[in-house]
Image 1 (spheres, rainbow, N blue to C red):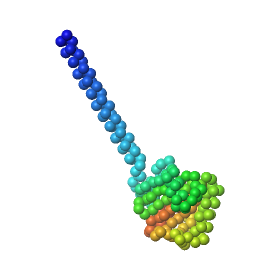
Image 2: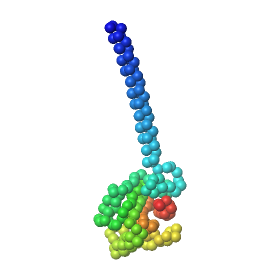
Image 3: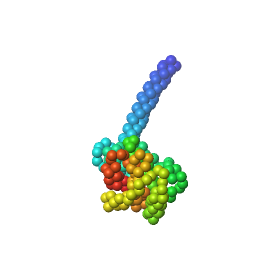
Image 4: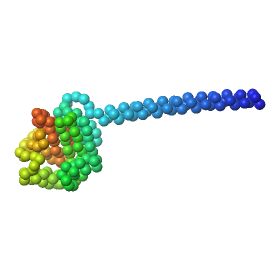
Length: 191
C-alpha cells in the first residue's frame, strides 16, 4: 500500500509538472501572438515616412501624407458622416466619407454622394451659398488646377479649396505658405 501511494504521488507530480510546462508554453505562445498582432496593428496604423506623394494607406483611400504632412487623425464611417452633417447643420446628401487631419495645419473632408449627378448638385449648391454671402468664407474664386475646376475661399485663418472628383466632394483646409504644394499633391493622392 505504501509503495502504491508513493507511485501515485510521483505520477501526480509528473502530471502536475507536465501540465505546468504545457501551460507555460501556451502562455508564452499567446503572449508572442499578441505582441506580433499588436505590432502589426500599430505598424498598419502609422503612415509611412518619406517626402513623396502619399499612396492610399487603407481601403478608404485616405492618403497617409500630403505635401510632407503626415496624417495624424482619421475619422471614417458613421462618425465621419455625423461630423460632415454637423458642419452643415443638416443632412447634406452624402452617403459616405472621411475626415483626415495632417499635422496640426491641414484637414481634408471627403464626402461621397450617392451618384455623380448628386455630387454635381451639391457642389453647385455649396458654391451658390458661398457666393450669396457667408460669414465664414470669403473671396470665392474658381481656378483650373491640373486640368480640373477647383474653387478657393479664405476663412478661419487659412485658404480652403474644394472640388468634385466623380461622386466625391473634397474640401481642403491647407497650411499657410504651402497652399500650392498641398493642393497639387491632394489632387493626385485622394482617390
